[in-house]
Image (cartoon, rainbow, N blue to C red; front, side, top):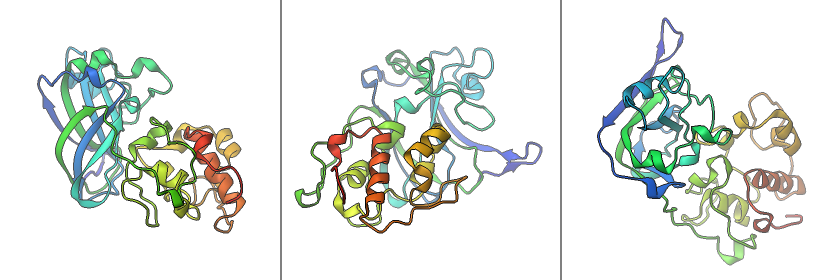
Length: 285
């Protein structure tokens, strides 16, 4: 269990680390770190994965996070684990990793999206020397079982909705913004095909039309849309009116299912995430 450190009045951490010479993963540049994991604490918000490369002291780099001299080269990213008793693959895009993060909280101080200098490269993937799994930056009970960790370009198998329910005119492209492509399970409150990705279920499957995105999706540790977008963009897209309360905003959408307002919010959300217009049916639902 992660608890506050009394002197710091902030959460401590739990960490498991492994040192060694790991296989060359440079051929998987642009892919994902894939963890086969399961947990009995799916609500815990502080899971992180890190790997060190290109540094003289991997343990030192993974303690400093680039905040002290010579501590670059330990790349860290958040991940979340769905509920369930079976092992499941959790994909964390390499584009979400950074070797600049706070050693106090684990939060990135510079993101790969904003500064390419902090991104892992084919060169760093070639010489991984240390792998770490963390629970940090959040209090709470923690239970995590790890079956394997690998780097892979292979995308999880997905399928478009059946023709009867498919409103997209083309496929949802890969590498959507904010890690949405890593959500390969359609965690929506209605029954859809199990092998649809979340993006396909939300943006293409008409059976989800009245429900929009899962509650709190954009606050999730592996997504965190609202921590990355400016207030002006949030206001522009009307995200503060989206179904489910957003931190710092009191308004909620009260449009009837299938209304134009619901469609507008859904369309704007998909556009924000980088889904092409060809994947959205233009018009009133």
